[in-house]
Length: 350
Image (tube, rainbow, N blue to C red; front, side, top):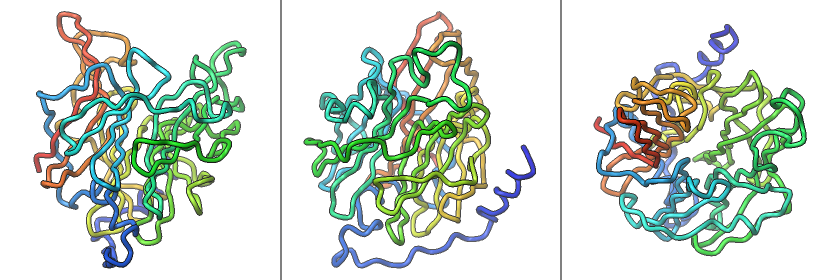
């Protein structure tokens, strides 16, 4: 770990108590961030959510890369990549965050051609008027983050071929495209993937966390926006160490602190956590999650190597009864060579 990164860590959480969140009257400001369904479902008590136990009764078979959308009128959407239809995004609906029913496919065909040909991920952003903006990660080429006409692997200076565009909905059923193109620059030095949005609980300003897969960086970065329609990456570069990817920002209840669940190391298939008291500019308290780390994972996880188990792409939810859950991509190859792929989940035991 380099000296510059150690200095960044020191600027984040320092072991002191987080700043309390000012009280909000939700009867007069129902769409203030702390009053939204999204905020409630993404808030974790400060003393919980650090120890987990996998739920052996649940597996959404054949789906990976989960993203959760919390509907203003109640209920939740789980958006994922179906294994048999790579390049599309499926929707499952739940009234309680536990049981899920298929609701077909996300209508990514509504997005302009400039937004990609195949789609791999999505992230929800509540709007002040109660609607939902869904940021969708599109790839310009079916081959992924590369120019299909180029020879050799992508290199610095290349267009990565990824785009972040948006769909809008008021109910999670009907979607329309917003704008005419990407929301985040994808020049030769920024290669965005796996987006996740967190709103500043005090002023509602959107903060986008994403995995920047630029060669030699391959880590989480932050971008900001005045309105959520155009983002500018921070000039400080990555906010977590290299290979720490797949960010899922949550709110530490009653405070301004951000907790960032993420894939601890893209090569180890473990899940981790970090925290920030400066709006996500820097993080500390970086650690692996007990119960979701320490297992053997042979990478890449899509290639069976018995026996192993890889967990990636965490997505947090706090249920109305106080249960805390993490959904995640789960790749397992059993001792007898069977490949078991799907979305798994774990329950907090602290």
